[in-house]
Image (cartoon, rainbow, N blue to C red; front, top):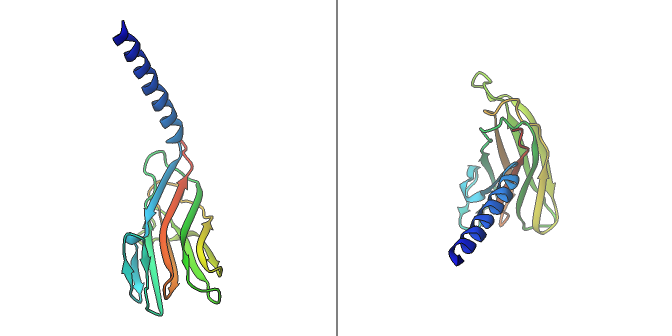
Length: 162
């Protein structure tokens, strides 16, 4: 009798958890650690915190972002980059770019959005771009960083279509 009650409570808890997870999973949400970004000019350091030019005077980085291959999402709900600006005089400048799928190898740009902040300290840059019509397009974020600027991570939310 006691076993049946415990089993019933456990089963009910599992069902409720699964239902909650299903509704949460309806949007495709990803967080990318900036340590996976690459330097395209200049140099610096990658660490558990993210990526920085360190004491170098300037660096440009690029961060590839993964599209959702399930459900052919066509709407980017939100992209937020979080980092650190070491100066109130110069801005952290980043651009989010959306490329088309099957663009004859040329990677045709569909849309891009450039954001910046000249506030010193922790910064959040919020981007808005159109996604490609299919699920094979791609995104990337590129940033111009000054000495001791950081990019910590990038959050991407795509709207689910299934």
